[in-house]
Length: 84
Image (cartoon, rainbow, N blue to C red; front, side):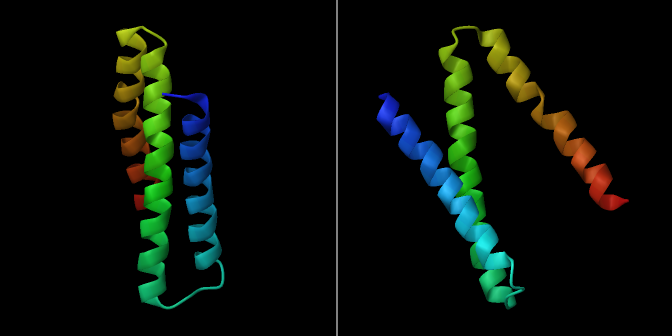
């Protein structure tokens, strides 16, 4: 994958997140909130893909394993934080 393509994915993900959060800031109606979170999700997924590709390119499967293993505890901590 070329360097310019990687930067394009990272920039597109950041722009999607920026647009989505700008849409949420004025407190819009519910339909706009759904659209904004969809755009934010696309942006976050693009950046997640690039993080996985970067770690996979490091050449060690254990590093990619640690990256994927961190998803579970982080999700559990966020669930506990949001529930309290």
